Length: 227
Length: 264
Image (tube, rainbow over all chains, first blue to last red; front, side, top):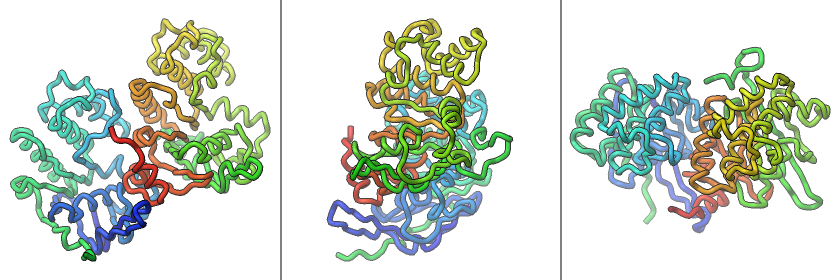
């Protein structure tokens, strides 16, 4: 489902003496349907950079990233937009929403974009919010005023609203209490069971043990840096 | 969903809605915009960003037919826009296209009631039944969150945010497929901007609109646009998926632009 080969990335800082910083070279991995692959490696090794490239958020310098047959590295923006709508979900660590939009709408939006009838989309959103223990009285409020943990759970609800065939998870259990962590891990297991290919970053070792089928150490993809 | 991707015969359209090639506009020796090319696909929102004087407004006014470019081609739904007869061009501007001005006073008739502002555009495309026009106008005021009892008030009695929402209703009532927006949230308070952004997002999604939006506000395009074009000195210096251009800008100017935004 996700097939990465010979992927490389560098940043060119034009306004800082045009410094070129190579951050990744020769990255390769694949994720099959129903499989969860965890990215490991110390902070700064490029785990998030790799995830962002798969999502099309960072531009790759070379190589290929096939997601459901589409090469994200060379795809047109509108193809990536379509891929993100229907196929590839991403739960980042940060919630970015239009201020004042009610939480229930934020969670239902990925379904509304796909043309799911509003009642059905909101019902699905409500069941996820309830499962993630967001009190119903908060559903009509904007999540921008919520605590970090609540925002994280809204983000997860949004990411799991549509049954994406491929999912990217960046620290989905960070800042969650035990009960909510358990809910998120079950959601991940259910997604795997329905055949989703998942690529994730989990600092929580027990969580990693439980949901990941394999680990990939991104340190192997870090180019040697000139001192 | 998908309505925006259907052509007039209900078939999938394998072609862009708007196709622009080598568009150039000069003011004497000065460049307005130079050699701009892009395709806009059905249902796609294209953001054009850049500082004042970057040529983004010149480009928009050439696209929307307010100014004639010196060079280049514009094809809409396969037809060459620049060689249309005046009558055909006017019909396009009244029905299929819409233009949302930064200042609602430029897009509204301030001496005419709110309902009249919306109804007028319907009449321009042939609606004649007073009751039906008033019903449609009331419906559209509701969609842009203006209370039905304000239908007979003039826009001069409205707040800036309400005026802008009324301008949007006036523009969208005829069911256009392509909407041009020039700094639509420009003159508004931040709290009003958020509401307008939410409204625009919903309308674009539900109606499957194709949109070209010009703004200097990167936060606005992040929330509204699928794709970005960054302009500097009349030329396009970078294009790409909106979040990719903002989070991983490649061109020196875009890097400067993105890193210059104040964090709150």
